[in-house]
Length: 180
Image 1 (tube, rainbow, N blue to C red):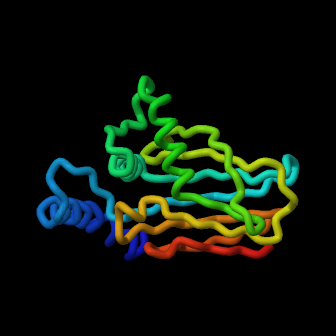
Image 2: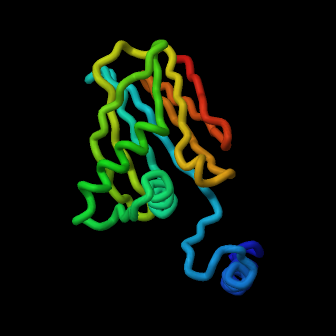
């Protein structure tokens, strides 16, 4: 074992415990609230050449997404309950349609909502476009959770013919254009 490994083994757990205890006593978050220090979403836009369509996956932390749905629609949101899935589908569809817009030409590209699923602590929302020509340029307007958090970070990945380009949108930034 080298010196770094020995020091990590010796100090690792005590430092972890100090970090946890410090976080418990010095947070500004109410005691019962869920807390994660990063407000982030990802939007993956992939052109499927075989089907000639854009496939979109938005990944959003579940607790943040439920708060955004409650704020916008003034109703209780619980994305994890199977008996509420149909009602939540309508809210998720309306929210995403209002906060995500893609263009491959001057007109907005209609996106079909396919559904959502819980993936650990996040929600994946699935959408697709109709048939389109291989895009040379994609414009995106992404405002997911920006009305909820001033520090919201939306990461947008776009892939066309194997070329992937990524952009970080720090609120209030909301638009990105990628050329392929």
